[in-house]
Image (cartoon, rainbow over all chains, first blue to last red):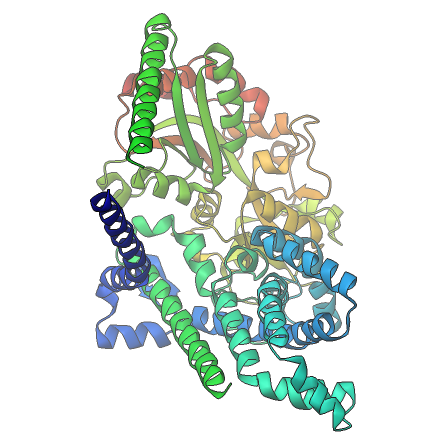
Length: 296
Length: 316
């Protein structure tokens, strides 16, 4: 009897280790296979010309990735610009001001938002955001007045990513003990001063980490962005000009890469770049969170 | 604990044997009736017709399941090569590199890509009278500049496909470019997406497969969308013999007898990784080339000529 139990115990722990191993190996395996596949374009001189060139013509073997990298960064930045004030204010309201019943229903709305597939955000973007941006573009006399632009992409991405950030922020705000708030209030601070000078100051690294994770999510947002960004291979010149982020490049051309020489290497290289960006952002967020917890 | 394991094992064994038995029985009882499933993905151009074919084929063979998804010709090719689907819908010439990979194909119908504009275009009536020449189309689609609509200050908004697409490739070929990347303009995903974008922008120009420009039930162009007539002889007006855009019947007739140029008219293919040997697949493909052809015209496509059709049947 004891032998069986020991045996079962052993089995259980071995299985858990295997499961854990799988999870740990996965990102390494993905990274390595991307490196392997993009190897033909990873030679130093090739890499720099490809990374910094703006010429994209797979049939002629020209794989300039610069427009894609720029578009990705700009779209994420625009997304962040919209997310920060909206998410921060919403999280503060829900955790500090809203009565319990309202806070509960607001939370379920956020959960619903988080569950909506990104293609629906994209579709809605095409129907609503793109025409809105188009009329704005006409008003500002932009060269591209179709509305398919990095601005539209930034807006759509900020909507599709904000539920995740909101969840992280709400958790953060709730982690602060009431003692702290009460002692600040006892010193004569107004409620808003408590939020501004105590909560926000104390939680700053955590808030930054939440947004950093959010940004890395916006980098990967594919379908929603691809549907509204215009997919034009050029470095965006303004808010209303079309762009072509890395994930859209991958999703659009995955069909062609099989047939044109070195095209697969170029697409894998763009995937590798995306992977590295997300990795860096995650490490950054991790460091900030660690920093914050050691201080606590 | 050990007992429960034993019971579980027994139950699993019993279940699997039972399942096997019923499967065997079924196969024996209905050996004359084909069953199984076929997965298809690829070109939007062939997608509506493929749905009709699948439905009609299933009326004769109800035990067959056919799963169809769009995604563009490029996805069809990638899926077939990766073994993700049995058949790919394909709407452009098969490249030498793809031939080298051993792709097998069969022509199943014809259709064409037509230039589309919004019906709210400010100079619509002029455009319908004068048409557009290939040279002007080249200016709009291939040159990076701020082209304007004929004799007006209105800037042209050029739309193209973002996904690897047969329509885009065929359109590029017509304009004398070697691939879809040569087409400039805002790129939108999918054939329906492109039609939608063109409809909404009065100054837009794009291109669509015939089946996404005309409504099959009414035969008329989709509300909001206009097909821009091509001035083939370049004399600055649409002559009687160039005027065949009113409804789907007149345009398909013009494609069939060659009045509409090719490209942008083209053959549509079904592709597979290698020559199909599975009886179900062979039956399905034979059916498409035989009774399936009865549904081609009524669904807005163009029949292959008899000799092409015979060659296709012989290739099976």
